[in-house]
Picture: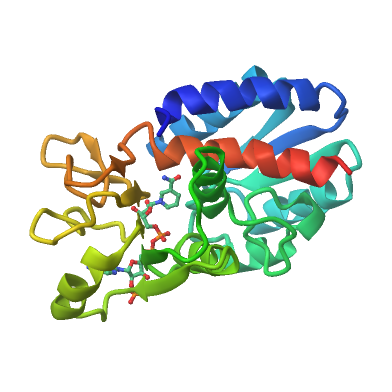
Amino acid sequence: MEIIKEYCAKKKLEYKNIAKDIDKKLAIIKVGNNQASERYVRNKLKDCAEAGIKSELIAYPNDIEANIVYNKINELNNNDSVGGFIVQLPLPKQLNEDKIKAMIKPEKDIDGFSPDTKVLAATPNGIYTYLKDQGFEFANKIAIVIGRSKIVGLPMAKKLLAENMTVIQMHSHTTETQKQELIPLADLIVVATGHRHTLTDKYKYKPTAIIMDVGINFNEEGKLCGDCDKNLPVAFQSPVPSGCGLLTRLSLMDNFIKLNTK
Ligand code: NDP
C-alpha cells in the first residue's frame, strides 16, 4: 500500500488538472477559534491552493448570533459562484449542528453531512477511494466497522456493503467475546470510536488484514494518536497522524469536483 501522504500529494496534482476548468469556489465557514479547528481549516485552505481550487474563508467570532450564520448558509446555498461549502465542526452551543446539516443544499454539501447528500461522507469516501486506488478488491471479503456514527461508521458500512463485502458493524454494546471471535475473521477493519486502545495486540488478526484508523485522540504526552495501538500484526495499518485525516481532507476536494463536473 502506498504511503498515504505521498498518495495525497499525487491526487492533488490530478485534481489540479480537473479543477482548472471549474470556475466556482469552495467556501469554509469557521466559528470561534477552537485550536484544532483552526489547524484543520488552515490545512483545508492549503489543500485547495495546492489543488488549484479557489477557496474562501468566512470566519465568525465564538459568540456570533445564530441567525447570522444561518443566513450566510442560505446565501451560500444560492450563490452560483460557490460550488460547495463546509461548516467546520465543532460549533459553539448557540448553533444547532443538526439544523445546519439539514440546511446545506445537497448540491453544495461537500462534507456529505446533509440528510439528502449527493456524495459519500468525506471520511468514508476518502478511505474507500484510497483502498480502491490501491487495487483492494472489496467483493467477497469480510469487513468490520467499529463505530456507528452518522458521519463515519454508518456511511462506511453502507458503502462497503454496496461493494459486496460482508460487513460486521461493532459499537459500544459489542461484547469483548464477540470482538475476540470476529476480529480474526476480518480482511478490512475501519476503526472510528474516538477511544485509544480500541484495537490492541490482545486480538488475533489475519496477517493480510488492513486496518484504517480514523480516531483522533491525544496520549498522556499530548501527542496525536489513533484508536488503535501502533504496529499491529497486519499487512497495513494507516498511521495517525498522516492517515485517514489526510484522506478526509482529500475527499472534500474530491466531492467538490464531483459536484461541479458533469
Ligand atoms: P462518535 O463519538 O460519534 O461515534 C463513536 C462510535 O464508536 C459510536 O458508534 C460508539 O458506539 C462506538 N464506540 C465507542 N466505544 C467503543 C468501543 N469500545 N468498542 C466499539 N465501539 C465503540 O465518533 P465519530 O464517528 O464522529 O468519530 C470517531 C473518531 O474518529 C473520533 O476520534 C473522531 O475525532 C475521529 N474522526 C476523525 C476524522 C478524520 O478526518 N480523521 C473525521 C471524523 C472523525 P455507540 O453508538 O454504541 O455509542
